[in-house]
Length: 301
Image (cartoon, rainbow, N blue to C red):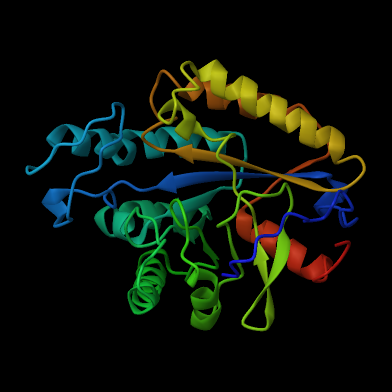
């Protein structure tokens, strides 16, 4: 990953191609599958996770409270969230840690049966910043092979928890098969970056239109907090998309939005989106393939 930062971007001179059907706004719903990949002494990790419904780290012993909080996502939240999205006809990308799928192989099977994309979220639920190159190369290969075996298809997308390393993009390109990564939060459209002498596609992600804010800073408390913020973002991007295309990412977590006190926030957002025209809901793979086919590297930049 080039360490030189790009503060320029499109400079409001966005490419002109529309999304399929003439839509101006592409909306990507991403459901993070991390249960079983969180740090846990019982899994042989060096420590326990410290953040779930509360911020507290148990040191020197398995944290049974934390583990059961994560288990809720796999036992209940996954089904509640995916079936709501399916009822609204929303294509879905699962942002899955490979170790989580190893612990919950029925999630990979269900994703295959329902046609969900699986984007690789690493092996463990961990940052790659500072990871040794050989170790990261092995993690990428192990994760991709695990998803291929469990889901039936190798992942074409990658998204690191927190920060990627300075080597991540080059290692993804060297591994082959990855169409895009989402290790950026700096735009409302896909864009290309040069990696190993070739154009590589980035689909930016978002932390604001993301249910993690129920935990991180507790900016969201009620389901309506999530829905109202996401609807405001949606309406802004939809207005702007009259002139040039836009993309919106909605980040979800089975153990967060999947709780009964929060799920109505997602239902409210979905109902709002379905009332509006000019919107294309798609998996990240669908967005990547459309961009690759219709926007050349260097277009409008």
